[in-house]
Image 1 (cartoon, each protein chain N blue to C red):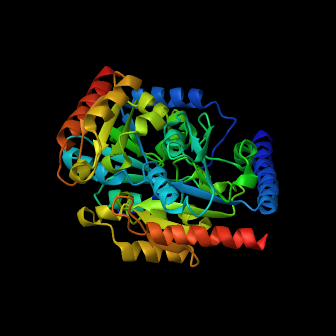
Image 2 (image 1 turned 90 degrees about the horizontal axis):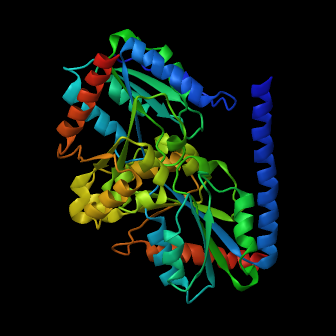
Image 3 (image 1 turned 60 degrees about the vertical axis):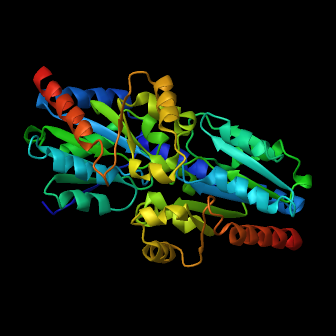
Length: 224
Length: 224
């Protein structure tokens, strides 16, 4: 049956992806380069948070950024303007990154000269959660204006991430977002997830987030 | 009507989506039922706007709603609580609706008794834009906190929609969102797109949007 064969193809693609992803992780360990996969909805604040993270960390670690976008290069241009090695992956309609796409990005970077690379995944809470990118750790941003019900609606994303950044806390005063309820919902899905409240506007949480990223990177470098 | 009908749908990759979509439009014309496809990022305010639309329109037109969600039924429960016929399509990880999935929803509704059905698509600015659902018209919501750069990053979504609702205008005072720039970017991609500024909190634009929807529905009913 055609339909069953199609499902097998999809499973094969997933299986291949896991192999490519593990191969990437082995290579990152050999090169002592930490790779973080950052995911969120469109407009949750990924690029601005990365810019703030660069400011907080670029004197401590050698950083690179892989930007993924359907069509544009606006984000990569902002990153490159900070003097950071920035690669733009144009996914041409694809809604996520898989390990092979990330590998293409890494192939064009000098891993030996970089301690930390951040992937800004495509703005999407669905598909990126389903594909192993080969990253060492994954983080997601949920912005306050999106609402505290998102763990109910996009559970896989909350389940696969190591860190949840609850961003745009500067909107809390004009929103009915319930932080306690959000945290309970996220922790029910993923008891190990580290939750940090952030705002690129006020600076809240940027140091805590940068500290986690710096420590995770150094631990990875020393452990490999 | 409190009971939620939950339908599990899967993507049938081999189906010719455009053929199924056109078949659906022929059926909707025969039944004189207008079908609107509503798309946005997660948390842009689709469900709340639908609830406001129901309040504004349910005395004028007989309405139904098809909710699409990866996993939950929270949105359909809110709609059903308004006494509106609500179907929940559970996409099981898929990031969009195609025409076959919508057909499954329509098959469980009494089209002859409904003038207008709104599809709340999966929260995603990428994949839903790529699939014809069989709807007569499509609308998208962009919420102010997402930013005015979204037409640059998700051009297809802005290109395929008949209406752009710029929602959560109550956030404009605490945001650097530039409405004039946003409109220019959207109109460059799609000169025919109708742009309405809305806020479910203040009520701004709800009447203009409901009027467009009511007139489009009546025009469709009379023209078929």
